[in-house]
Image (cartoon, rainbow, N blue to C red; front, side, top):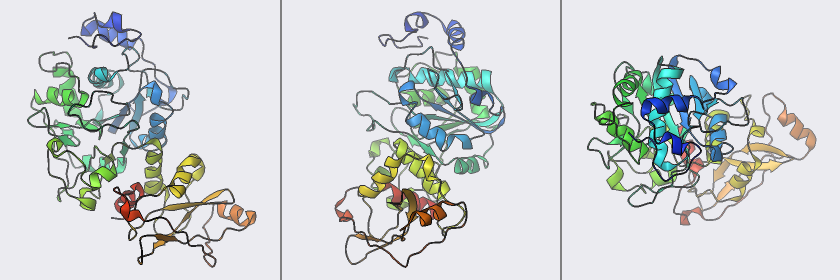
Length: 415
């Protein structure tokens, strides 16, 4: 088996492409370094999560994932090709000997699953793989790609779903796509899960078998083809209503069904019905959208203003400016979250929809003094003064072809 595609330069490519797999393994292992944070993670549990990334995304996508959902896995770390500057981030340089290229993504995943099972732990019930790398490849008939795509995962929903299944049976779970394979394959963008039994079979029967597990230019197709050759096919992860738990696209495209039907293995519902209340993942989100997702799901209390105050200082200011100053493309009868800036303090403000036209009227609490701001910043129950309010109107959103991200997220939170 030729592990790396010829013609893509990398620091070790000339040497590694001439080796067989056994020699390649020993060469790759000597370049792997794990951060102290990664070494301290548990070696057994329900869910092992690994995110495939590369150095050019260490300060953007990888950082956003680490700041939000990754730590909610029992063991969650980044797999990359070079050390990160922050040792407090859990990472391992599993790909240090493999050139960063779309054409090597299949080999990276194949080697990573083998490395996890043999060198980190074989005692987790489930192994979840997510990619945070840019997929550069000629479009041809491929799914449209975005430059700043990434994945957000609601880990609690994933764990709850997996708890109903038996990890000792060979499960292969995710968002099923149709092309290339008769029984489909799971999208790498939405992330896919292998049970302990499935990973054991992958390592023992497929890793060193070029006949059953040949190289493939498409990472997710390749993994699906390997598993299909030993009788492991994608499971149906939709709920009883036919709504998807895993999503390989952003909310707006899913809502308006802007997805090529030839790629969909199962029929999809339109609008809000496309989103399962127990939703697990979205794909094609920017780092700020990942942080906003986490903010809305974990830091905002829909029932009122109390001790569960969001900690805004952990998020970049441009996130809030963009929400305030850019039209969110939302319909006027729905709810969303608006942010205002007053006395250098971010506050969450409710608003009401103006049903008489296509604008929105926001109710902004009165913040007039630094003393009031300081009091609101104190770690105690919030007291809101709406005796003085200001109405702010935004443009006609009905003319927009897309729906706002915040609207979709609230439909998930409030189901």
